[in-house]
Length: 350
Image 1 (cartoon, one colour):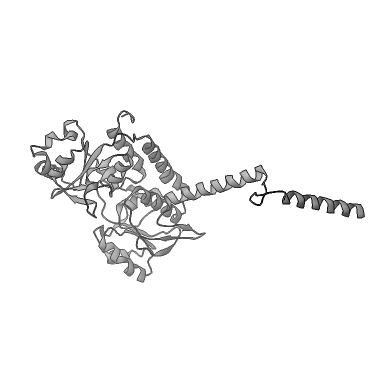
Image 2 (cartoon, rainbow, N blue to C red):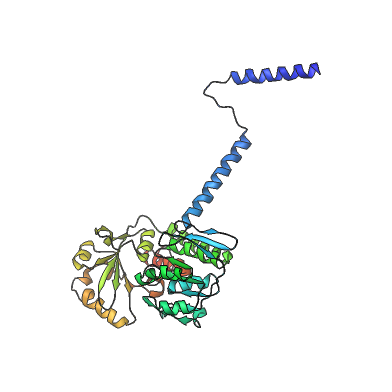
Protein backbone atom coordinates (compact mmCIF):
# COMPACT_ATOMS: atom_id res chain seq x y z
CA UNK A 1 0.00 0.00 0.00
CA UNK A 2 2.83 2.41 0.94
CA UNK A 3 4.67 1.60 -2.32
CA UNK A 4 1.52 2.25 -4.37
CA UNK A 5 0.87 5.52 -2.59
CA UNK A 6 4.53 6.59 -3.04
CA UNK A 7 4.39 5.76 -6.78
CA UNK A 8 1.22 7.80 -7.14
CA UNK A 9 2.84 10.80 -5.45
CA UNK A 10 5.90 10.57 -7.72
CA UNK A 11 3.72 10.48 -10.86
CA UNK A 12 1.66 13.46 -9.68
CA UNK A 13 4.82 15.47 -8.95
CA UNK A 14 6.22 14.66 -12.39
CA UNK A 15 3.00 15.87 -14.04
CA UNK A 16 3.11 19.16 -12.10
CA UNK A 17 6.76 19.73 -13.06
CA UNK A 18 5.98 19.02 -16.73
CA UNK A 19 3.16 21.56 -16.74
CA UNK A 20 5.30 24.12 -14.96
CA UNK A 21 7.89 23.77 -17.70
CA UNK A 22 5.44 25.12 -20.25
CA UNK A 23 5.47 28.80 -21.14
CA UNK A 24 2.63 30.84 -19.67
CA UNK A 25 1.46 31.60 -23.20
CA UNK A 26 1.39 27.97 -24.27
CA UNK A 27 -1.76 25.86 -24.12
CA UNK A 28 -1.82 22.27 -23.05
CA UNK A 29 -2.07 20.27 -26.26
CA UNK A 30 -5.34 18.50 -27.01
CA UNK A 31 -4.93 15.09 -28.63
CA UNK A 32 -5.12 15.60 -32.42
CA UNK A 33 -7.93 13.11 -32.96
CA UNK A 34 -10.19 14.76 -30.39
CA UNK A 35 -9.37 18.28 -31.63
CA UNK A 36 -10.10 17.34 -35.24
CA UNK A 37 -13.35 15.69 -34.22
CA UNK A 38 -14.46 18.84 -32.38
CA UNK A 39 -13.56 21.03 -35.36
CA UNK A 40 -15.39 18.74 -37.79
CA UNK A 41 -18.47 18.78 -35.61
CA UNK A 42 -18.34 22.59 -35.39
CA UNK A 43 -17.96 22.93 -39.18
CA UNK A 44 -20.79 20.48 -39.79
CA UNK A 45 -23.06 22.36 -37.41
CA UNK A 46 -22.22 25.66 -39.10
CA UNK A 47 -22.95 24.16 -42.55
CA UNK A 48 -26.25 22.75 -41.35
CA UNK A 49 -27.16 26.11 -39.81
CA UNK A 50 -26.21 27.92 -43.02
CA UNK A 51 -28.28 25.57 -45.21
CA UNK A 52 -31.25 26.01 -42.89
CA UNK A 53 -30.94 29.80 -42.90
CA UNK A 54 -30.80 29.87 -46.70
CA UNK A 55 -34.31 28.45 -46.98
CA UNK A 56 -36.02 29.34 -43.71
CA UNK A 57 -35.56 33.08 -43.56
CA UNK A 58 -38.93 34.58 -42.91
CA UNK A 59 -41.71 32.22 -41.88
CA UNK A 60 -39.61 30.51 -39.17
CA UNK A 61 -41.60 27.28 -39.35
CA UNK A 62 -41.70 25.11 -36.22
CA UNK A 63 -43.28 21.68 -36.65
CA UNK A 64 -45.00 20.05 -33.69
CA UNK A 65 -46.61 16.65 -33.38
CA UNK A 66 -50.09 17.89 -34.25
CA UNK A 67 -49.59 21.50 -35.30
CA UNK A 68 -47.33 23.94 -37.12
CA UNK A 69 -46.27 27.38 -35.87
CA UNK A 70 -44.96 30.09 -38.18
CA UNK A 71 -44.70 33.86 -38.67
CA UNK A 72 -47.17 35.09 -41.29
CA UNK A 73 -46.84 38.05 -43.67
CA UNK A 74 -48.37 40.41 -41.11
CA UNK A 75 -45.59 39.55 -38.64
CA UNK A 76 -47.89 37.59 -36.33
CA UNK A 77 -46.89 34.23 -34.88
CA UNK A 78 -49.59 31.73 -35.89
CA UNK A 79 -50.28 28.10 -34.99
CA UNK A 80 -52.22 25.87 -37.40
CA UNK A 81 -53.40 22.32 -36.80
CA UNK A 82 -52.06 19.74 -39.22
CA UNK A 83 -54.14 18.04 -41.90
CA UNK A 84 -57.00 20.56 -42.33
CA UNK A 85 -59.91 19.03 -44.28
CA UNK A 86 -61.95 22.07 -45.33
CA UNK A 87 -59.54 24.51 -46.95
CA UNK A 88 -60.35 27.63 -48.95
CA UNK A 89 -57.54 29.14 -51.02
CA UNK A 90 -57.84 32.72 -52.27
CA UNK A 91 -54.74 32.86 -54.49
CA UNK A 92 -54.11 30.53 -57.43
CA UNK A 93 -50.32 30.57 -57.13
CA UNK A 94 -50.71 29.27 -53.56
CA UNK A 95 -53.35 26.81 -54.68
CA UNK A 96 -50.83 25.40 -57.13
CA UNK A 97 -48.26 24.95 -54.33
CA UNK A 98 -50.84 23.60 -51.86
CA UNK A 99 -51.92 21.00 -54.41
CA UNK A 100 -48.32 19.90 -55.07
CA UNK A 101 -47.79 19.57 -51.30
CA UNK A 102 -50.62 17.06 -50.94
CA UNK A 103 -53.40 19.49 -49.99
CA UNK A 104 -56.97 19.70 -51.26
CA UNK A 105 -59.53 22.54 -51.19
CA UNK A 106 -63.29 22.94 -50.96
CA UNK A 107 -63.24 26.59 -52.02
CA UNK A 108 -61.18 28.63 -54.48
CA UNK A 109 -61.17 31.87 -56.44
CA UNK A 110 -61.85 31.97 -60.17
CA UNK A 111 -58.75 30.60 -61.82
CA UNK A 112 -56.73 32.18 -64.57
CA UNK A 113 -56.59 30.20 -67.77
CA UNK A 114 -52.81 30.09 -67.46
CA UNK A 115 -52.88 28.54 -63.96
CA UNK A 116 -55.31 25.60 -64.05
CA UNK A 117 -55.36 23.34 -61.01
CA UNK A 118 -57.11 20.12 -61.95
CA UNK A 119 -57.66 18.88 -58.40
CA UNK A 120 -59.56 22.06 -57.53
CA UNK A 121 -62.06 21.90 -60.40
CA UNK A 122 -64.87 20.66 -58.16
CA UNK A 123 -64.22 23.24 -55.41
CA UNK A 124 -66.76 26.03 -54.99
CA UNK A 125 -65.92 29.49 -56.29
CA UNK A 126 -65.81 32.27 -53.69
CA UNK A 127 -65.26 35.08 -56.20
CA UNK A 128 -62.01 36.46 -57.59
CA UNK A 129 -58.66 37.04 -55.91
CA UNK A 130 -59.24 40.79 -56.01
CA UNK A 131 -62.86 40.54 -54.84
CA UNK A 132 -63.55 37.38 -52.81
CA UNK A 133 -66.87 36.98 -50.99
CA UNK A 134 -66.35 36.93 -47.23
CA UNK A 135 -69.92 35.70 -46.74
CA UNK A 136 -69.38 32.80 -49.13
CA UNK A 137 -66.08 31.86 -47.48
CA UNK A 138 -67.61 31.75 -44.00
CA UNK A 139 -70.62 29.77 -45.27
CA UNK A 140 -68.29 26.95 -46.35
CA UNK A 141 -67.21 26.52 -42.70
CA UNK A 142 -63.52 26.15 -43.52
CA UNK A 143 -60.95 24.92 -41.02
CA UNK A 144 -58.28 26.91 -42.90
CA UNK A 145 -58.15 29.86 -45.30
CA UNK A 146 -54.99 30.47 -47.34
CA UNK A 147 -54.62 34.01 -48.67
CA UNK A 148 -52.17 36.61 -49.95
CA UNK A 149 -51.40 40.03 -48.51
CA UNK A 150 -50.83 41.28 -52.07
CA UNK A 151 -54.52 42.21 -52.20
CA UNK A 152 -55.68 44.76 -49.65
CA UNK A 153 -59.18 43.27 -49.54
CA UNK A 154 -57.79 39.88 -48.51
CA UNK A 155 -55.53 41.39 -45.87
CA UNK A 156 -58.53 43.18 -44.37
CA UNK A 157 -60.39 39.85 -44.06
CA UNK A 158 -57.88 38.32 -41.66
CA UNK A 159 -59.30 39.77 -38.43
CA UNK A 160 -62.91 38.92 -39.38
CA UNK A 161 -62.05 35.33 -40.22
CA UNK A 162 -60.18 34.91 -36.94
CA UNK A 163 -63.14 36.38 -35.04
CA UNK A 164 -65.17 33.56 -36.58
CA UNK A 165 -62.59 31.05 -35.29
CA UNK A 166 -61.30 30.33 -38.79
CA UNK A 167 -57.51 29.79 -38.94
CA UNK A 168 -55.69 31.81 -41.61
CA UNK A 169 -52.41 31.45 -43.46
CA UNK A 170 -51.61 34.93 -44.85
CA UNK A 171 -48.46 35.02 -46.97
CA UNK A 172 -46.54 37.04 -49.51
CA UNK A 173 -44.60 35.23 -52.18
CA UNK A 174 -42.48 37.33 -54.52
CA UNK A 175 -39.15 35.58 -54.95
CA UNK A 176 -37.70 32.08 -55.17
CA UNK A 177 -36.79 31.92 -51.45
CA UNK A 178 -40.43 32.72 -50.66
CA UNK A 179 -41.41 29.70 -52.73
CA UNK A 180 -39.01 27.41 -50.83
CA UNK A 181 -40.41 28.65 -47.51
CA UNK A 182 -44.01 28.27 -48.62
CA UNK A 183 -43.35 24.66 -49.60
CA UNK A 184 -41.77 24.03 -46.20
CA UNK A 185 -44.82 25.47 -44.47
CA UNK A 186 -47.41 23.72 -46.65
CA UNK A 187 -45.76 20.29 -46.50
CA UNK A 188 -45.63 20.63 -42.70
CA UNK A 189 -49.33 21.55 -42.51
CA UNK A 190 -50.39 18.72 -44.84
CA UNK A 191 -48.10 16.38 -42.89
CA UNK A 192 -46.33 15.50 -46.15
CA UNK A 193 -42.82 16.69 -45.37
CA UNK A 194 -41.57 13.90 -47.63
CA UNK A 195 -42.66 16.07 -50.59
CA UNK A 196 -40.33 18.91 -49.59
CA UNK A 197 -37.36 17.29 -51.30
CA UNK A 198 -38.97 17.05 -54.74
CA UNK A 199 -40.95 20.30 -54.58
CA UNK A 200 -38.26 22.58 -53.12
CA UNK A 201 -34.82 21.04 -52.55
CA UNK A 202 -34.46 19.63 -56.06
CA UNK A 203 -35.68 22.88 -57.60
CA UNK A 204 -33.22 24.87 -55.46
CA UNK A 205 -30.31 22.58 -56.35
CA UNK A 206 -31.09 22.88 -60.07
CA UNK A 207 -31.27 26.68 -59.84
CA UNK A 208 -28.00 26.83 -57.90
CA UNK A 209 -26.29 24.78 -60.63
CA UNK A 210 -27.62 27.07 -63.36
CA UNK A 211 -26.48 30.20 -61.52
CA UNK A 212 -23.04 28.67 -60.92
CA UNK A 213 -22.62 28.01 -64.66
CA UNK A 214 -23.68 31.52 -65.74
CA UNK A 215 -20.64 33.49 -66.96
CA UNK A 216 -19.70 36.31 -64.61
CA UNK A 217 -17.69 38.34 -67.11
CA UNK A 218 -20.28 39.16 -69.77
CA UNK A 219 -22.13 41.89 -67.84
CA UNK A 220 -24.98 41.99 -70.33
CA UNK A 221 -27.37 44.89 -69.82
CA UNK A 222 -31.08 44.04 -69.80
CA UNK A 223 -34.44 45.78 -69.92
CA UNK A 224 -37.67 44.26 -68.60
CA UNK A 225 -40.84 45.70 -70.10
CA UNK A 226 -44.24 45.12 -68.51
CA UNK A 227 -46.96 45.48 -71.14
CA UNK A 228 -50.73 45.58 -70.74
CA UNK A 229 -53.45 46.86 -73.04
CA UNK A 230 -53.41 50.17 -71.15
CA UNK A 231 -49.78 50.94 -70.46
CA UNK A 232 -46.11 50.10 -70.79
CA UNK A 233 -43.71 50.23 -67.84
CA UNK A 234 -40.40 48.71 -66.82
CA UNK A 235 -39.29 46.42 -63.98
CA UNK A 236 -36.06 46.52 -62.01
CA UNK A 237 -34.22 43.78 -60.10
CA UNK A 238 -36.71 44.03 -57.21
CA UNK A 239 -39.15 41.86 -59.14
CA UNK A 240 -39.46 38.14 -59.79
CA UNK A 241 -37.94 38.17 -63.28
CA UNK A 242 -35.58 40.94 -62.22
CA UNK A 243 -34.17 38.69 -59.51
CA UNK A 244 -33.72 35.84 -62.00
CA UNK A 245 -31.78 38.02 -64.43
CA UNK A 246 -29.65 39.49 -61.63
CA UNK A 247 -28.83 35.97 -60.42
CA UNK A 248 -27.69 35.22 -63.97
CA UNK A 249 -25.14 38.06 -63.81
CA UNK A 250 -26.88 40.70 -65.90
CA UNK A 251 -27.22 44.43 -65.23
CA UNK A 252 -30.76 45.84 -65.23
CA UNK A 253 -30.72 49.34 -66.73
CA UNK A 254 -33.71 50.32 -64.54
CA UNK A 255 -31.74 49.76 -61.32
CA UNK A 256 -30.08 53.13 -61.77
CA UNK A 257 -33.40 54.92 -61.34
CA UNK A 258 -33.94 56.23 -57.80
CA UNK A 259 -37.45 54.91 -57.24
CA UNK A 260 -38.79 52.73 -54.45
CA UNK A 261 -41.23 50.74 -56.57
CA UNK A 262 -40.21 47.86 -58.84
CA UNK A 263 -42.53 49.40 -61.46
CA UNK A 264 -41.04 52.38 -63.27
CA UNK A 265 -42.18 54.78 -65.97
CA UNK A 266 -41.33 53.76 -69.52
CA UNK A 267 -38.85 56.21 -71.06
CA UNK A 268 -37.71 55.72 -74.63
CA UNK A 269 -35.03 58.35 -74.10
CA UNK A 270 -33.59 56.38 -71.17
CA UNK A 271 -33.70 53.11 -73.11
CA UNK A 272 -31.93 54.63 -76.10
CA UNK A 273 -29.31 56.10 -73.80
CA UNK A 274 -28.60 52.79 -72.04
CA UNK A 275 -29.02 50.65 -75.22
CA UNK A 276 -29.58 47.25 -73.52
CA UNK A 277 -28.14 44.01 -74.88
CA UNK A 278 -31.38 42.15 -74.16
CA UNK A 279 -35.03 43.19 -73.87
CA UNK A 280 -37.55 40.92 -72.13
CA UNK A 281 -41.29 41.57 -72.21
CA UNK A 282 -43.91 40.46 -69.68
CA UNK A 283 -47.50 40.66 -70.90
CA UNK A 284 -50.62 41.07 -68.76
CA UNK A 285 -54.18 40.48 -69.91
CA UNK A 286 -56.09 37.91 -71.95
CA UNK A 287 -56.38 40.08 -75.06
CA UNK A 288 -52.87 39.63 -76.36
CA UNK A 289 -53.63 41.56 -79.55
CA UNK A 290 -54.37 44.73 -77.58
CA UNK A 291 -51.17 44.21 -75.59
CA UNK A 292 -49.20 43.91 -78.82
CA UNK A 293 -50.87 47.08 -80.10
CA UNK A 294 -49.68 48.91 -76.97
CA UNK A 295 -46.14 47.60 -77.47
CA UNK A 296 -46.23 48.69 -81.10
CA UNK A 297 -47.59 52.19 -80.46
CA UNK A 298 -45.41 52.97 -77.42
CA UNK A 299 -42.18 51.30 -78.47
CA UNK A 300 -41.86 49.49 -81.76
CA UNK A 301 -43.27 52.29 -83.95
CA UNK A 302 -40.63 54.69 -82.67
CA UNK A 303 -38.07 55.12 -85.51
CA UNK A 304 -35.23 54.78 -83.02
CA UNK A 305 -36.45 51.40 -81.72
CA UNK A 306 -34.87 49.46 -84.58
CA UNK A 307 -31.48 51.00 -83.74
CA UNK A 308 -31.32 49.32 -80.32
CA UNK A 309 -28.67 46.62 -79.96
CA UNK A 310 -31.14 44.11 -78.53
CA UNK A 311 -33.53 44.58 -81.45
CA UNK A 312 -30.82 44.50 -84.15
CA UNK A 313 -29.27 41.32 -82.72
CA UNK A 314 -32.56 39.46 -82.25
CA UNK A 315 -32.48 39.66 -78.45
CA UNK A 316 -35.99 41.08 -78.01
CA UNK A 317 -38.09 38.38 -76.33
CA UNK A 318 -41.72 38.18 -75.19
CA UNK A 319 -41.68 35.76 -72.24
CA UNK A 320 -44.34 33.08 -71.67
CA UNK A 321 -46.84 33.96 -68.94
CA UNK A 322 -46.86 30.60 -67.20
CA UNK A 323 -43.20 30.94 -66.16
CA UNK A 324 -42.69 34.68 -65.85
CA UNK A 325 -45.97 36.53 -65.39
CA UNK A 326 -47.40 33.99 -62.97
CA UNK A 327 -45.34 32.30 -60.29
CA UNK A 328 -43.49 29.31 -61.80
CA UNK A 329 -43.40 27.50 -58.42
CA UNK A 330 -42.01 23.98 -58.93
CA UNK A 331 -40.97 25.06 -62.44
CA UNK A 332 -38.72 27.82 -61.12
CA UNK A 333 -35.67 25.94 -62.35
CA UNK A 334 -37.17 25.74 -65.85
CA UNK A 335 -37.72 29.51 -65.81
CA UNK A 336 -34.07 30.08 -64.88
CA UNK A 337 -32.83 27.64 -67.49
CA UNK A 338 -34.85 29.26 -70.29
CA UNK A 339 -33.37 32.69 -69.50
CA UNK A 340 -29.88 31.20 -69.23
CA UNK A 341 -30.23 29.64 -72.69
CA UNK A 342 -31.22 33.01 -74.16
CA UNK A 343 -28.38 34.87 -72.46
CA UNK A 344 -25.61 32.30 -72.81
CA UNK A 345 -26.39 29.85 -75.64
CA UNK A 346 -22.71 28.92 -75.79
CA UNK A 347 -22.92 27.56 -72.23
CA UNK A 348 -26.50 26.32 -72.04
CA UNK A 349 -27.29 24.25 -75.13
CA UNK A 350 -30.77 24.78 -76.57
